[in-house]
Amino acid sequence: MSDSTEPPSVSPSIKADSESRKILGPAGNRVEVREEEKESMKKKKDKDLVGKKPKSYVKLAKSSPKIVVRKKDNESADSSCSSKSSSSSDGSSVKMARFRKKEKHDSSSGEAPMVTLAIPFKRCDWITQFSDPLHISFHDEEWGVPVHEDKKLFELLVLSQASAELTWPQIFYKRDKFRKFFENYNPSSIAKFPEDKLLLGRPNGGLLLSEQKLRAIVGNAVALLKIQQEFGSFSSYCWRFLNHTPIKNGFQYGRQIPSKTPKSEAISKDLMRRGFRCVGPIVIYSFMQISGMVNDHLISCFRYMECNTINVKKDPKPVVKETKKETDDLDETKLCE
Image 1 (cartoon, rainbow, N blue to C red):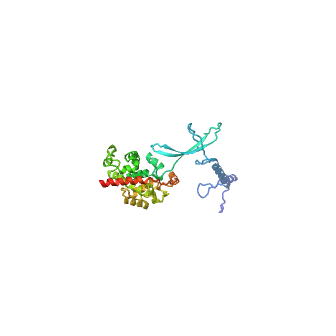
Image 2 (tube, rainbow, N blue to C red; image 1 turned 120 degrees about the vertical axis):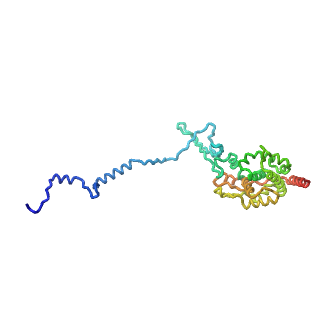
Image 3 (cartoon, helix red, strand yellow; image 1 turned 45 degrees about the vertical axis):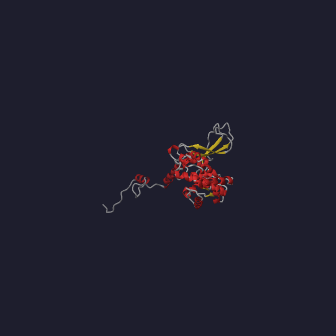
């Protein structure tokens, strides 16, 4: 027996079988994949991705969507733009802009003959869908509109004074009672109010305003008659502080609106010097806002541009002789007392 050992011979069939099997790599049971298999798997994966659509896939429309609203029987099909007030679920009115577009209607197609879009107007931030309907109406129709009539200006001054004791919704609900009690805000009649007249304003057991405020309004009517005698009208006196031109502030946010300004302080000081009472700078600035001397609508509010485009009217001049006579009569009665 020789010392050199020869390796055992392997049959050719075993060699062929070992060559056909896949060789295990050093990483364990991972199989070394041929390049051809890698490419075939990659092509299959790409094919699957192309065939499937993601869940969030949305097909884009080639044309813009159409909003079709059924035409009402009583609604005209003219091409116009009108504003309409509708009531919301909470009872408050919402201002709506209704745009109507006239189109040719094909009887063979089932489309509506007219497209109607209802777009709500943007108001100032302090007017919401929960605001009182009277407050919304006052904002949309009166607040910020320039006023040049003496009785109307005196009414707004009284309402501004009342805002120190009542909320604006309460004032709006009592507005008719104010007009009746103050005889449509005729300063000549208010200046002659007797003592018992002030004590008769007790609807439902309570005064419209405090006795101090009522006496101040009567005294302000007397002072207003003297202003009419000197300047021709109360409107001329008020608007001369602004050179007869409304102030257009153009605020973007409600927090920017002041409660008083140097201009309101100057008017308040001059009114007090002339005998007016309960006319502080805050009350006067509120009076300037509701009488249109100042446009404090936010620039995003639809009323901002509307109030800016209102033509400024000339101040009406009442007859000075009659006013002078009434003022002299009031002075004589005071001296007799």
